[in-house]
Each structure stands twice: as C-alpha cells, then as structure tokens.
Length: 103
Image (cartoon, rainbow, N blue to C red; front, side, top):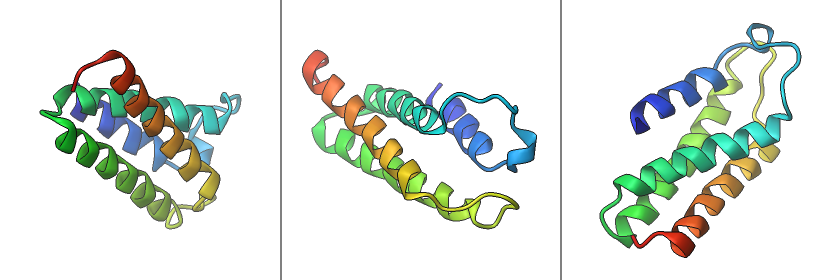
C-alpha cells in the first residue's frame, strides 16, 4: 500500500500541468494531504521511533526531489510553499502517531 501510494504521488507530481484537471482543489491542501497519508503509511511500517523518524525524513527528501524534478517539466517549477505543505503534512502524521499510536 505504501509503495503504491508513493508511486501515485510521484506520478501525480511529475506530469505537466496541462495533463491535470482544470478545476483542482487547492494545490497546497493536496500536498499536505498526500504527504500526511504517505507519512502515516510509512509510520505503520516503522519498527521503533528511530525508524519512524528516518521514514519521515526520507519522505521530506522525496518531496524536495520531486520539487527539483518539476523544474525539468514544461510549465512546472520548484515551489517552497509546496515544500512547506509537504513538511506540514509529515509533521501532522508524526504528531498524530505520537498522540494516538505507540511506535
């Protein structure tokens, strides 16, 4: 499930804008939600706090890499606000896990 969600996220972020639907929800909310869900899925696989932290850090690096790769696509670019939304989604996943799940 985690791998499929990750591949879907990468594919969705690396297509040209013209391939996306005209009426999309707020882009930052999509980033937040996608990384929150991916973060929660990663935390389910983690075996201990160190692995959980490494998983969330790895997903943050993935978000950065996606933003860098978007510069190679027509009508896409790196956006720090997208990175902030990604980080906020991962922080939400981590805090949710701390509050409701024992890692």
